[in-house]
Length: 243
Image 1: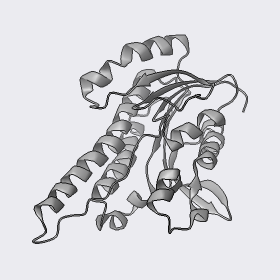
Image 2 (image 1 turned 90 degrees about the horizontal axis):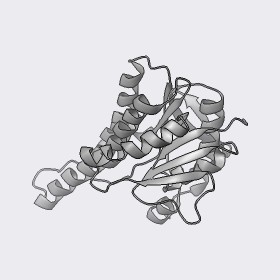
Image 3 (image 1 turned 60 degrees about the horizontal axis):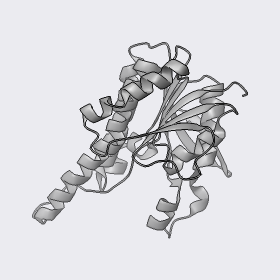
């Protein structure tokens, strides 16, 4: 793939977000939108960074639009990717559990909806406003959320938020937009944070962010396919399987 791409990446400073600029064709451009700026020195394709307000209140997010209007007028966006999100546990509170358990449940669910689902809602709005007719919106779901029972025991907020991303994409595709809409559902990503949190796990079966970014670019962006995609790793190879 050699044609330059004008892209907008929500969550560009995170582990997965950082993997996408190197996967883009040369001479492409990236607008980063995130709570934190990309690591310094940032990737040369990142032409600008727009700080995402910590509160993520509607009025604060709307304040980003004049900057994006200007960027879009100069280079219409071909690709919008949302890699933003996080994980936390917060199980349903059992009978007679401490009040703090109930607070953890509510706090975790609210946090997951904010970081995982709201960032996708924001990205969908950016897509309908800015994406070119041949463009592609790519959201990040999670394999675990595809089966509710997988998340019900200790991370209902995470499962709800990530399954909501899938439902959100289905609603947007129901409008028959000219652009394409896809959701990738990875299993555990091989990141420093995940290794620190789960040092006893076998890292060999985890998906490297660079491999996922490369597969997304080749299969979805260059290949032009859309839909919901499971992310599997077999024989050390990461690939997308359509759901």
